[in-house]
Length: 313
Image 1 (cartoon, rainbow, N blue to C red):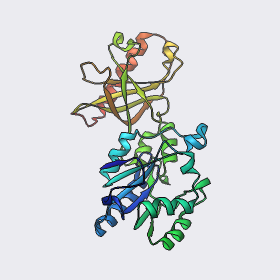
Image 2 (image 1 turned 45 degrees about the vertical axis):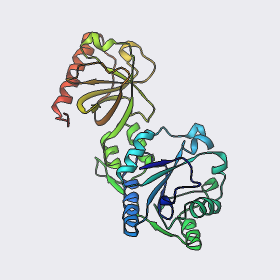
Image 3 (image 1 turned 90 degrees about the vertical axis):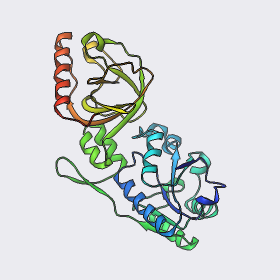
Image 4 (image 1 turned 120 degrees about the vertical axis):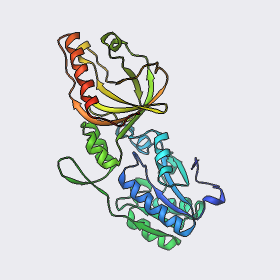
């Protein structure tokens, strides 16, 4: 799959295709359904499937204080879009000029004049154009005038752990993750929530306890404070892991950090990129009366993770 950083002057092989537009944050099951329909239409017509997304998130320009923490890194988004069958992803720069385009101008200048689209696939809540004034009905009306078809999908739903059936969205997924409900988030994502980051130097306290942990610099939405069962990929190997999202209250910490202990791993992880699948919530963080109490709890955490028989190897 190709990454294209502008919508103007695309190679001819990417013109006249099917287009899906969105932030694709997390590429959840709703996105996956939209892309699957787009892939089917593109394959039937012998034309390309393009995803149009934004970098950075438009809210980081319009209302920086309201910009959400991303559910995925850029590399993860691209990988999942490729797995969904996208031929090329176009990153629209979230500039004030682009965001000031009216819905009509966006369709004419981007979709028609530059991309020459034949079909667009979207969900019913799609909004676009200056002030998000354009809606799915706007897209259908203007698309009919411009000569392209619009396919509107019904929202995807997920069944949560309490049997509640909910419409899938990035905002709901983000809320569930913030509450530590990572299994419910997995139902929305169609995969475990994945964190990716570089291992950085920590205080090395875990080594003295017999549980050397990797401190990871994360630029994504963090799960709610707590301890989780996870799996960690290191090169071609996958390890069961205990993941802590905490300010380390036992040692009077103030900043929330992400630390993980990889069961049965030996070696140096500094500077390496780890990908963590957050599988299940284990417990709240707590302040212990001393090092020995903390060590006993870490032993129980490791035993709990090992008992889950997580996919490793």
